[in-house]
Figure 1: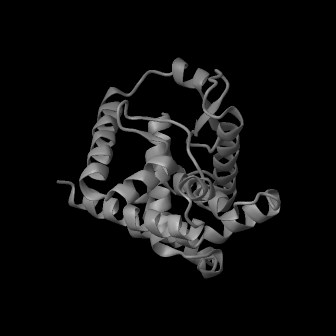
Figure 2: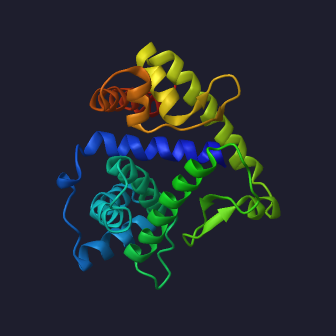
Amino acid sequence: MIISAMLSALQGLIFFALHYENQNSFPRQLTAKEERECIALAAEGDKEARDKLIQHNLRLVAFIVKKHYPDFRDQDDLISIGIIGLIKAAQTFDYQRSISFSTYAGKCINNQIRMYFRKIKHQQTEVYMNEPVDCDKDGNTVTLADIFCDPTDVAQQADLNINIEKLYRYITEELDEREKEILTKRYGLNFATYRTEKILTQREVAKQLGISRSYVSRIEKKALEKLRERFEKND
């Protein structure tokens, strides 16, 4: 599940890095009619409609971060994490439910940010049965206890393992040493175990490497673009 969250984070940050330089460039909110149309198309499996739903709800992420976490220093990092929650919301939203997408997405965004703070607090060294590790289809947090109570989807897990192996292989094959070093630190990658370790913010990576945060951001975006292109080729 932790590896799955890491892959979801990578997907979310690829989306964020490739489309938006700052929160002022976020698209306008959809009208009620436009949102209904996107939801209906997304329910039929239309990826473009789902992506449009995500893009035009990015302001919701920025709003939640500014409202609930105004004193947090790395606002961009929180927005990136919140976008991961937004993407999860678009992927898991039950379009037959009476709840609005914005309400559901707001719950997923908040849960994603809270999980991030939990991980920082415990520094990923202590494991508790009630530790949130993901969100369910209703946007509620899922704990380790919940996971142990549910049967494992073997096929899904096998597919996930294949993608994990691809991710590590593509990083080795496609990225130069500086790009690999930055992604390794940013996402806590361990090439020996294929498990995640401590995840660092861009500011923390910059401090360790003695370079600027903006330089870390540029290298990270370039590396994520390379990986996105490689995944699209899919060998």
